[in-house]
Image (cartoon, rainbow, N blue to C red; front, side, top):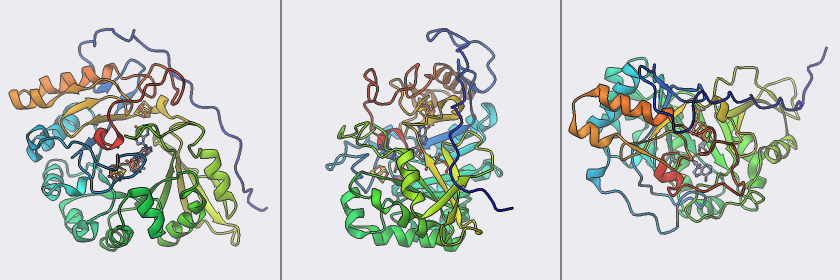
Length: 371
Ligand SMILES: Nc1nc2c(ncn2[C@@H]2O[C@H](COP(=O)(O)OP(=O)(O)OP(=O)(O)O)[C@@H](O)[C@H]2O)c(=O)[nH]1
Ligand SMILES: C[S@@+](CC[C@H](N)C(=O)[O-])C[C@H]1O[C@@H](n2cnc3c(N)ncnc32)[C@H](O)[C@@H]1O
Ligand code: SF4
Ligand code: SF4
């Protein structure tokens, strides 16, 4: 019997539990871990190491850059290691993502990873990076204990890459990806944001390149987190469009592995010219059109030590002041729990709706939040 190929109809999104408490209810005493009013538990810690970046992706940063934080306002390596310890030992954090801004611009990145690894031998620690400088640092990152890496790459054409990032550095990013693969930095994931009329037609070529090299490509729907406020609901490329573009050359079938709270919905990829062979896997992150907030497991800390319970939060809770004024880790943990208890239901609101009339874009851009 032949295998059935092709995309099935979509299952309805997981229903949201009713909130266990009113939005402004006090945080209960004796909470276990980073739980919120909707019964979600954050176990995935995303820590921004810096707000600085050496690219200027149009969907993220303004051409002129941003006013960078002064150095004394940014978490030090020691503070980062301490915060991760509080999360892992006291609050149920089970995986760590280092991000930014561009984490590779931090001169003490290897020291940070080694410090975390020394305290947590089993913790999965991954890095999301634009890949600039990775060719020089991949081996040291691996030796320090980095588990794996996601590299952002939107185009394989130098001109299109330069148009999207406002910098002519495609070769350097490719060299970084190659070196990360050479030193064995886990499964390499490649993140691509598709922009209409710029790189959307390139989607099948990007996928061909990724599966040929054994990388897992993930297409990301553009979210309204850009400094230029250029996002529109109609202008963005939706997950449905991405799937149908890929179907011109590939057949996608749902990856049977459990999604397990991941933003990416994964698909097995077969080339139309060779249907018996699974060539690889592609993920599609449909934050706008197929939101996954009901199963969100994320807690974010910005480069200046503030908790953001949601990517789209309008509120932040400072931990840096407390970290610097007290050696009492329990007090820091309690404040972190309070911040997470108030986590909004979805997209920074108590209903899902990116681009809905009542949606208000957060002041910070993706680079300043920590993507
Ligand atoms: N709505 C929403 N989107 C997110 C969130 N976290 C990540 N994303 C989107 O997913 C993209 C990829 O994030 P990464 O940090 O590379 O990786 P990941 O998706 O968390 O996951 P891994 O598969 O574990 O590598 C980001 O650029 C965002 O566009 C989130 O908490 N909420
Ligand atoms: C903010 S960056 C930080 C890490 C690193 N500089 C990089 O580019 O990988 C993390 C991810 O966010 C994604 N991103 C940035 N702005 C976005 C937006 N407006 N919508 C969707 N994804 C975005 C990027 O493509 C990148 O994969
Ligand atoms: S997406 Fe990453 S590389 Fe691009 S501007 Fe934002 S922080 Fe920099
Ligand atoms: S938008 Fe907020 S609630 Fe939804 S998945 Fe992202 S961080 Fe979680």
